[in-house]
Image (tube, rainbow, N blue to C red; front, side):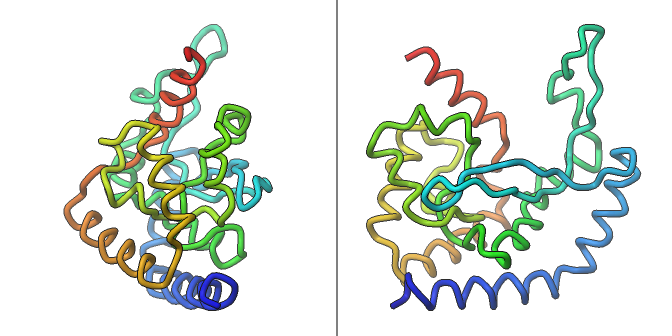
Length: 202
């Protein structure tokens, strides 16, 4: 009953309430990032959701788009704006994913959605992480996050799929708030690139 009905109800209530309460912060960030990113405060990207169905994730844009003479984007460190660095440090770029939760693309709690290009690289067990909706936070994020290897992260994701319950989600939410205030294990998209490179060498 929880997974088929109440989890979605809680997602709607939490995401709507959070967006309402955080709207002043969101508006300020939109204005600041518009100035920092030449009028482009938002970042849109395709990600696989439940059953690997693609959806468009919404985040705050924290990187500029300068390119070198060869037309390639500069390194991430050279592209992060001061405002973008602050937004990333406090994981504020994830706030807009509350819109994805409200739309039904994501859940508050679930495995983090990675890039579509990685889909053929998962083994059969790892692919089970897509049996549930992806989340803003998840079991891997509160159990090591960036300190975990990719194999360990996927083990945690699959564990969550097998143990999804109201009590598990509450535990993850509680631990997430603890980590936000401590600023532990800040997530960056560099880990995604590192995983793709690692899988390509195996």
